[in-house]
Length: 441
Image 1 (cartoon, rainbow, N blue to C red):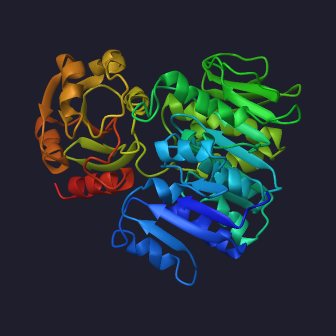
Image 2: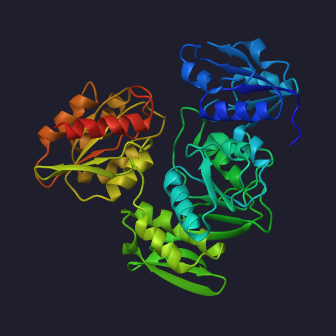
Image 3: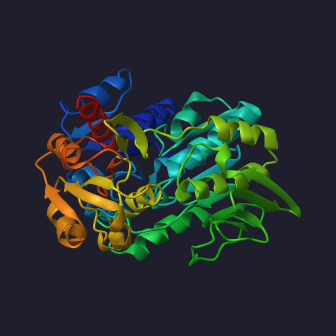
């Protein structure tokens, strides 16, 4: 990519910091804008010591976005905000960090997107490929921006990326050699005008692929987009002629006339959603010819990630699970599907616009529901009729109430169905605080 001399970076989070360091190394004149004040950005600004840039902090102003040939936005920045629309109309090119970074990457890219399971699948594929070749970069939306890989100048054999819909909004040439779409359910409807608009953003992961590339997605999905790449499916409880599927306790991979089987219980990950996550990773492993023994070793050792139906403690026969990463309704559905009956559900947070009513059939597993946060009343209105429901002021009170109403043999599941931003910095802080409260009981 030919970069102009003057570039605006919008957003000074982890991605903005990494982008600034890279553009500085390229000798570019950098301007950075963020709605946070310099005081609030003290930590981020400290990481940019020694880098020359002009900072425009504290608020968004129209004049801050005009006059630049290129603007690079962070994933959390709405690409359709009015000032960016005006800049775009004036001829400014607006891209995200993924588009910028990927234009400097020549190694094979494996990209994973979907509403849920992205981080688990990205991490699992990363572990498999690391055991196979010891030379991988795992990053993207998972926490390590791709631009860091470019900046460091190291060369991995494979680049494995978690990609969000926000990142896909601003791609132009981004082309993964292998692209995976895990699932699609309502999410981020506080940002997108409709579910169709959200799906369209996700579909863009296939947009620039060619006939030599691979596109992998759940057989349940009806992809409303022309795909040039070779396609493969995965599915649980359905036999496929080609692809990966789960049937009668075994996972099957059928590819290029060969069939390989794996016992499902080789992996400690629980739930049908994790079965499908594993199937997608198996397909990728077989596409790239990774030895079965290495795949099995990785499946055995990969124990999942924090904040995803994570066992916390058993107290007087009550098991506590932290599923703080469940920031949408479908994630909580999947968590409940993996559990037996007598669940005490703690939920609530900042509403993202989806319907909670789709939880109805699973509420028969829920013995009681304790709600917190901005969405508590709406969840109560839509689901409160299915079970005993309590609304508490904060997470501490919710944990105590959950313990009070539970009995030996019950499971307390903290699975919010909502984002964390009404009460916490992010889902990680929310989950860690939950675990601390449970340990203190």
